[in-house]
Length: 66
Image (cartoon, rainbow, N blue to C red; front, side):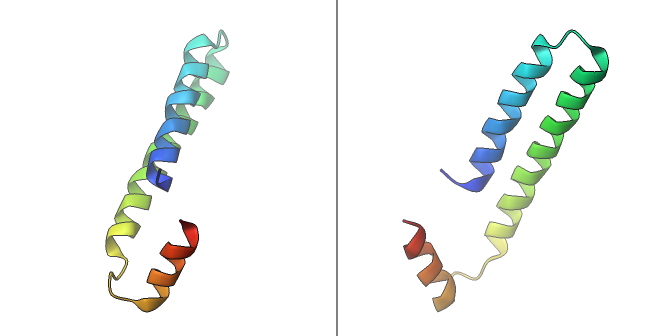
């Protein structure tokens, strides 16, 4: 699972908390946090797309994460 997927899972989790929150202020805070996680997921995907695919350093890093 990639970082973008992790951010999306966090967003779903936080939105579930928001739906159960009786306080409007806290509910809005949870919703804002969920939106931030969605933005981070998009940024993570964009930066992953921008990475060079033939760079040996990135190849080493990718193998070490597996």
